[in-house]
Length: 101
Length: 191
Image (cartoon, rainbow over all chains, first blue to last red; front, side, top):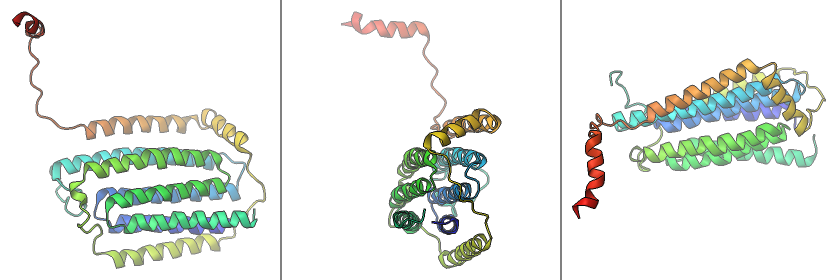
C-alpha cells in the first residue's frame, strides 16, 4: 500500500477525532477525541518515515515524544476532570461556565 | 509490498480503526465509547506494524491500549452520575460539526495526496537494527529531548496526584504521644 492510502486513513481519523471534540458534551469524551487526533498524527509521522526517509531517526523520536505528551495529557486531563466533577457535580463542558471556583 | 496479503491487512486494519473511531464518537453511552477505543487503538497498532515500525507497534499496545485506556475507563467510572445513559451525550451542533469535519478531511486529504512525494524504494532496518538505532539516538544525539520528555512525565505525575487527591477538611490534630502509648497498652491492662 502506498503513502497516499495511509495519509487518507490518517486524515479520516483526525477528522473523526475533531468531530468528537466539537460535539461531545462529556469532558472525558472530548479527551477521547483528542487521543484519536494524537493517534492520527503519529500514524502520519510513521507513514512519512516509512515511505520518504526510512533510514532517518527524527520521525521515530518525534513519535516517541508525541506518545509521551499523549500520556501526560491523559493523566493531567483526567485529574482535572475529576477535580471539576468534585467541584461542580458535572463534567458537561457547556455547564462548566464559571471562572471563579 | 503490494502483495494481496498486505492489501487485505491494510484495508481490514483501516476499517477496524475507522469504524471503531466512529463508534467512539457516536456511542450513546460514555462507557461504550470508552470500550470502543480499544479496537481503535489496536487497529492503529496494526497499521504501525504494517508500516514496519515494530517498536511503536508494541509501544502503542502497551501505552494506549493498556495504560491510557484504563485511565480513561477509571475516570468514566469515577464520574458515573454524570454519565447516565439516558442523558444525551452529544450537543445539538452535530450537522454543523459534521460539515466542518468533512471539509477538514477533504481539504487535508486532498492537499496531502495531490502533493508529489519523492517516495523511496528503500526499506527500513529489521526489528533489532531499528530498535537499536532508536535507543542509540535517544541517548546520543537526542538526549536533550529525551530528558525533557522524562521531566514532562515527572511533572505530569506529580500534577495528576496533586490535582486528583481527595480534598478533605483540616486533619484532626494527632493526640500527644503519651496518650497514644497509654491507649495502646490500656486494653491489655483494662481486662
